[in-house]
Length: 220
Image (cartoon, rainbow, N blue to C red; front, side, top):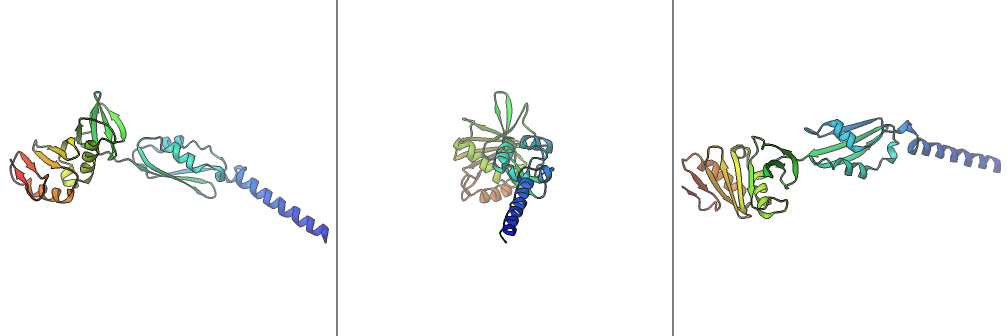
């Protein structure tokens, strides 16, 4: 009886040991493919290279947090989520930063997202992005952050007509439209009301539209 029990213990230990080896050290359950989803402009092979996971590396021992950190070093990406998909796939789901405006610094156009993070640097601002002008062009600057929030919240029907945004403070945001007309927007409060009123006002001829106080608007 004792011999049989000892045999069963050894057999169980062997099975457990084999299973552990299979999962944690063997290439049998290693990374055979890397699935990347959510990327639109960032090449898949760039993300895969940045992830830095070798093929056939045991899937169970991949440090998911470390892979996420490496992938997020790509400045065009806002978020990254890494998961194991058994038996041999590492899935990386990303969300790209959305360009909101361009900001000229040192003769170059920095393409930035709604948080002021630089996504790309170009010689000229992309034609469909408004150019942001602020006194202190830096992430965290109240005037810049307010202007970016205002731009982000604009409906598509208005956003496509904005060519330049000037912000001297968090309460003083001004647009220049593609046809040369000027919109005094004010702060980021009551954006829906301002957009709705401005859409109607733009049907009337004027050079300057002041919707900074939606209850009392003026045209000049």
